[in-house]
Length: 123
Ligand code: HEC
Image (cartoon, rainbow, N blue to C red; front, side, top):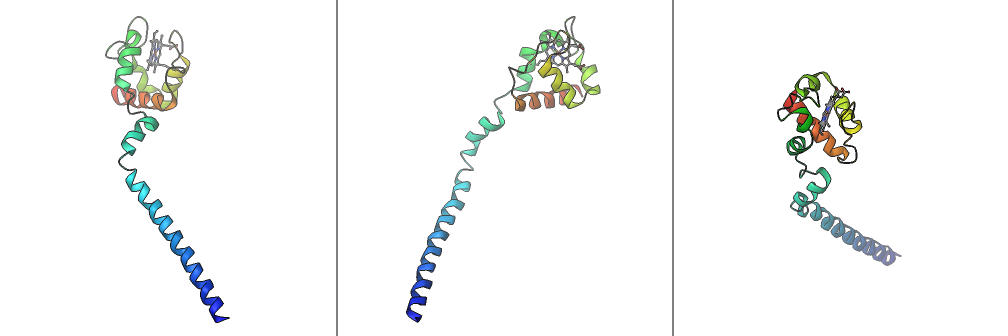
């Protein structure tokens, strides 16, 4: 009887040991993936997206190189401060008035980054 209990305890102990080493190697993986995370982040957060470059390429034709507007688009330095982030992203996604919609061009993250950039630039 005692021997059986002993063997049972021993085999439980072994299982526990395997479990522990499994957890240990799992613990190691996140710290190893800290380095590749630099490679993963661009996919998730899309730091490759250059909000200022996008603005210069896609918005300045109507809103002017400095955002102060042209005959084709209003002065964003006057508009952005009075709009909420949602209103600015709505404009980018829906294209009010004569403005094109950028909903097919930009994903949610890029729109957010562009709105953040507009906010930082135009108030
Ligand atoms: C083809 C010209 C054109 C382009 C390109 C354009 N816009 Fe506009 N945009 C307009 C016009 C016209 C309005 C005014 C629409 C209205 O008030 O009805 C406007 C309005 C806006 C507004 C203010 C919306 C509001 O509710 O007052 C924001 C913000 C804006 N544009 C941002 C952008 C951004 C950012 C880009 C580039 C991604 C861009 N626009 C590209 C023409 C353009």
